[in-house]
Image (cartoon, rainbow, N blue to C red):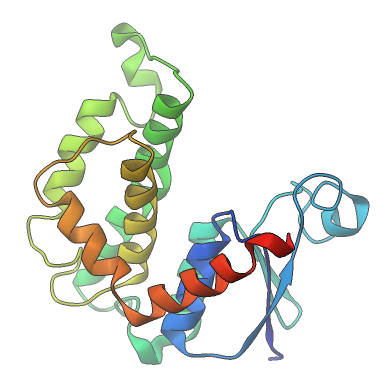
Length: 206
């Protein structure tokens, strides 16, 4: 298998993938893609027809969609234990909350950010049901702490804390018991600090 190449923009979800790569302590190349004509252009659409970042090339393998990239990396590089093995009972919680963060939670955050209100009688049609139900469920995810799988930080924590941290910073998700402490603990990890510093340093270049 050849090297890792991440196509990203410092003002995108690609920050999560940089964080994953830093957690794994593997070598990788970053190709910055500008929003607008470059990201929507024919050359980049060969890599991702959606014209969005991030996208990861691992040798000849292409992975898009941020949660899929993070999950792939966690499984592909198991030494750092960012995903419980398939025969580990904690794998159930890992998959549950990873998919919850990538599905209902992100949907609920996006809907609230854009002012989309789901009529109560239509709540069963959307994956998150209601914004309040989503946050109530998220609080349950944190009861076993300090991380989603107990004592072990995983790719699910990385993804969830990234989504939650951004939503709280934007004022979309209100403070609830445990939310701020969870995000702060995740963001204080050295790999997160390295990834954020790297992206911040390159904002002016894209």
